[in-house]
Image 1 (tube, helix red, strand yellow):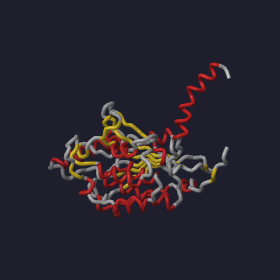
Image 2 (cartoon, rainbow, N blue to C red):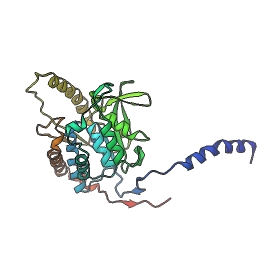
Image 3 (tube, rainbow, N blue to C red):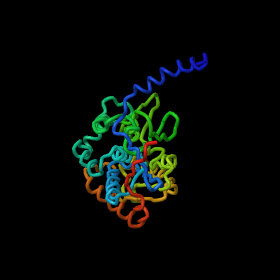
Image 4 (cartoon, rainbow, N blue to C red):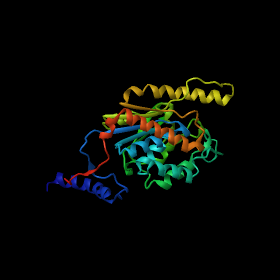
Length: 305
């Protein structure tokens, strides 16, 4: 061994020992492949309580055995997408929401005595994520998952799908401005991803998804009551969020507009009704696009190289 090779060996030895000492994360994504090489991606929009309807869509896709290779989400869509990517079934997620009291507005919007930029505290949501996620790491999930949060420092949408701070980024994605306090991660201040990108298609492109399904909420376009301050404020936020939802629709191959039938962002107690509306939208999607049934979840284990 030459002097140069010896020096390189000594420099790399500590790094190799460090890598070898890292614990493996469970559950691991399976080393598997499919006869079908087409990647199917699903993006779930924000919508607060209405986001529970995404679970019904996922239930319809599950029953049809349609494979989802990549999930992206914003705000409530990020929360739903996270639990699905972690391996929980749609109905299990409903049960978790009820068990943890996440179907009650009073449990979700807790008073934030710190008053650090919001009137409510996101700590309860973060505790629920810690409880049901084995590791605080994106790479530990069964399905590749990306969430979108708005970076206030640099005025941009940030799509995160690798590394740590899983619970922090997901709560940041759902930190509705003025209601929830912003989340600070590594010196950057984040708020709800819906401010910049309510239907994140970008990660699906980055992951090479030929099929890109986008799920969002088709609300009434005419407001009949705009007298109270909170009505005007919520309507203004809705206009902002709708604007950065509709401009992404052309980039999806399949769109699922879910009608929440008059339910709003605070109607968490109607989780079962919203689930059903999402389920009906999912069934309609499959009826209109039977080609999706060609992309099954049947797994073939890849041979070890």
